[in-house]
Image (cartoon, rainbow, N blue to C red; front, top):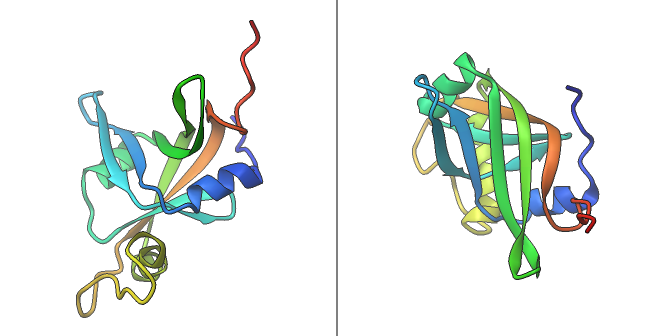
Length: 144
């Protein structure tokens, strides 16, 4: 599948400072879901990890992922939400700068993050969307 170009509405949700629910596939095939900070690098969604963990191991073994983020607005009694699916890759290094930038949105202006001297270079997870769906202006209204 080809990657998709993120619309301004989708980019605004990713940049909103709302936490994302990120799902990878565990070794035994079950879903592994965590809450993460997200940012943008072009049309990729990026997630920073100081240390290798289950998410990193899962992606190195199986690149299929999804993430969801609640968004402003509601429709039919449901909160707007964004779901992004498809593939991810892990790149080594660069995570202190990414986390410092994201902390300004998620924790607050002036935050110093990671809160330790000499943080590890870590890992940046790049999610390359091939499908965007959910409920909001990025999703087609279902026909009756």
